[in-house]
Every structure is written in C-alpha cells, then in structure tokens.
Length: 217
Image (cartoon, rainbow, N blue to C red; front, top):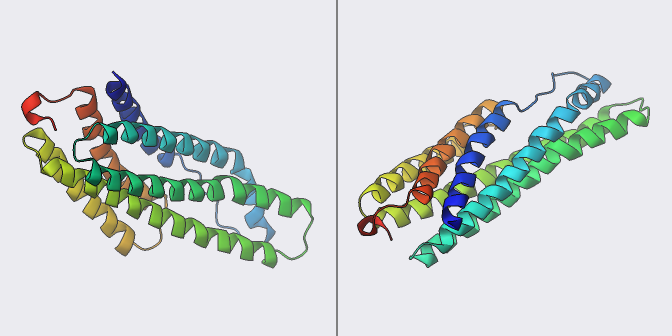
C-alpha cells in the first residue's frame, strides 16, 4: 500500500516538475539599477515556482526512499539513493538561491537607494555562478542515481530490463547535455528534467502496478 502511494506521489511530482519549470519566470535583460527592478517584478512568481519545486523534490525523495527499501540488491540501490539525495540537496540549494536570495537581495539593494549598481551586480553575478554550479552538479548526481537504479533493473528480467534500459539511455543523455550543453537555461533544464521524468514515470508505474513474482526482485 505504501509503495503504491509513493508511486502515485512520484508520478504526480514528475509531471508537476515539468509544469513548474515551464512556468519558470525570466527577468528581462536590463542594465544598471533597472536589472534589479526587473528581478523584483518577477520576484513573487519566482518564489512560487521555486517553492513548488522544493516541495516536489522532497516528495520525490520520499518516493525513492520507499522504492529503494523495497529492492533486494540494497547495496546498489543505496548508492543510487545517496546520489539522488545529494543531487536533490544541490538542486534545492540552487532553487533557494535563485528563487529567494536573488529577489530578496534585489529588493534590499533598491531600498538602500544606491547610486552605483556595480557592487550589487557583482553579487548577482556570483549568485548566478553558484546557481549554475549547484544545478549542474545536482542534476549530474541525479543522473548517476538513475544509472545505478537502472543497472539494478537490468539485472532482472522482463519489463524491469526495459525500464532499466530506458533509465540508462536517459541518464547518459542527461549527463551529456549537462557536460556539453553549455550554460543551463530554462529550455535546456526542461529537456533534462523531461528525460528524467520519463524514467520516473516508468518507475512510478512499476510501483503502482507491481510486476508478477517472476519479474519482481
């Protein structure tokens, strides 16, 4: 029963993640103090999207914890879970920085009535670098987790191998996009998350509709 509930949560979270990222606000490119004003304007939407993503990530952690505890090759799946947890913590760090620190800093900077925007822009630039690093490392770790879980499935038979193969392909493709795709933006992130969501939905289906004993672990 718990496994099925976790499966439903995982499927819902995977779909909601795609919706949330597709609604990720982007501040228009401006110069000087106008850049801070643009960030403040999209601040409420930014907070809402990133808060939603953080809740989704914790829901996924719950679902994959249940999934991992139900596997027989726990040593392999535990490695996957550690990578998954670490990746999600990095992505949550990026979400907190992008969705909460940046808008709050922009609002605070404008309230101080600055004459020169340069110091504030330097801090925003540093935050942007931190967001990129956390996001890339986080999603690389998530792809590593998918790879380990998929290897575990490849060691079985029937539908498990198909799902495992999908996971291997999705994880390799996602890692390639992260390593060779340049700076991460909303469009590239949507593609990466879409690849992961495909495999997450397959796992959710397996959790909600368990395979017969011969195909189970």
